[in-house]
Image 1 (cartoon, rainbow over the protein chains, first blue to last red):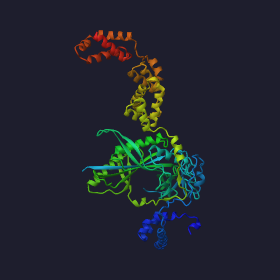
Image 2: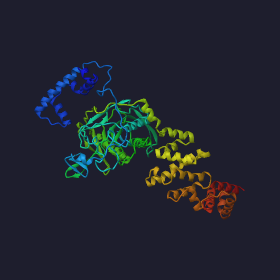
Image 3: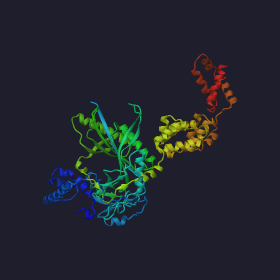
Image 4: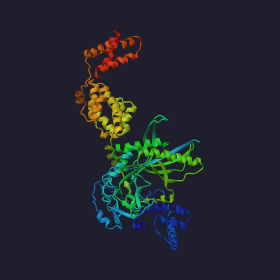
Amino acid sequence: MAERYGINHAIIPNIALKFKTYTLHMSLTIDDVLRIAHLARIEVTENEAQATLTKLGGILGLIEQMQAVDTAGVAPMSHSQDVTQRLRDDVVTETNQRELFQANAPAVENGLYLVPKVIE
Amino acid sequence: MQWEVVIGLETHVQLKTRTKIFSGASIAFGMEPNTQADAVSTALPGVLPVLNREAVQCAIRFGLAINAEIGRRSVFSRKNYFYPDLPKGYQISQFELPVVGRGRVAVQVPSTSSGQAYEKVINITRAHLEEDAGKSLHADFHGMTGIDLNRAGTPLLEIVTEPDMRSAAEAVAYARQLHELVQWIDICDGNMQEGSFRCDVNVSVRKLGSDKLGTRREIKNLNSFKFMQQAIEYETRWQIETLEDGGSIHQATVLFNPDTGETRAMRSKEEANDYRYFPDPDLLPLEILDTDIEAVRANMPELPLAMKARFEQEYGLPAHDASSVTASRGMANYFVAAVSALGGTHSKDAAKLIANWVMGAVAAKLNEEGRDITASPVSSQQLAGLLGRILDQTISGKMAKEVFEAMWAGEGTADAIIEQRGLKQVSDIGAIEAIVDGVLAANAGMVAEYRAGKEKAFNGLVGQCMKASRGQANPAQVNDILKQKLAG
């Protein structure tokens, strides 16, 4: 099926690798879900966390199955297309559009974007 | 108990490009806030990053300069964290596959009150390309924080060392050497005040003889070598005292406060450091071909170590002199220009004389006035003009000092000053003999002392002769003639 969508097989073990720590622990806990949500700054309620846990568990289950595929000799892949980065000449092409961009901002002063106070 | 400090550095070097790493917005310093914050820097929806070729070439230059392996295929990753001066919610950086791999920097650690100077090789783990963040201004804007995104997207090369350094002196020597190197190969303007060269220093301590690393604390954002030295020394003492008092070190990020001379933990919640790197789908892998590397290599300047070896060989300079005149690109350019201006038939003598003056009088004046050699009021050509007059015996070395001072003060060329002040050395044998005769006649006491075996009296007589000639007599000739006359 992956082939039908033109997806290189190698990307699959690569994704699995990212979740390896979780798959090794067999399954996610509610705490894992809350932690991931916090890191992504997504607010989830207890109920949503439970539902998310079930959904994520299903995805990780699939990844676990895919990890069974023998990928020996397959180079890890970092992009779905087999092309490389094109480079740009070091030439200024952008002009000052501050007025335009800041028209969109909730608060600005002296050319600065204002955001809620950041406390270190 | 004996403790050992273990230090590793991460240095952010701002690359000398015209535009940002992923967009065509200017990176000029000191512009009005957000006037260089284009759609990519402000992370407007729908924008895509396009990599700057010049930034890649700078990275390759650095890789070649430290004899590192260049990553033929390197990958950009997203480093995810939330901060208002990072509007995308991630920094584009490199993780598993950096553009520059392992390399080495040979560092001259200067002598201190407790030890001799020595050379140490510091291993570079990697160097990778990444974008800078914007600036948060915490001055009070009605209880809010101001954000300037002009700096967001500025190309950086982050250079990471192995934990190879064992003292603040070694760490500072490495940082200074790296600072000179990135300017030498022209990838960074080296301006520390403007943040073009910033160091994070990882410090840990362990019992001497142990091969296990202690828990480290990271001192962030040091932008002066003096502060680096102070911060490492304070941090080292603090860690040792904490351990000796039975405490333990927790991994943390600390800031150095120049006013108190202390380091203080910024955040200890290590959860904040879960960056969840993953390859950025907006950027394709960067492929660097042999032809790319060779093109960069063809434009590399001669590197300091190679130049040092050449100076030793070509001009017979002692190792110490050759090191000194290649300590910075500006110094080396000055030296080379002076040698070629003076060169000619006696180029070895000329080179040694120039080295002496560059390390001596010129360096002292520059130091005194806090100037860089590129801003020296006495140009390399002018210095060559002065030293030429020593070599052809128009003036003595002592006179030359006086002329040099006048040149520094902007009074003109060496020849003009010598002429104006009548400093021309007297080498006419008849004239010098007359002076010597006069001195001998007037100082019978000293002559008698000398004849009675008091060698010191001879120097006194030379001094009298020089004084009588108002310093203009050729000292070597005075010596010879005086000896002849006293023997006679």
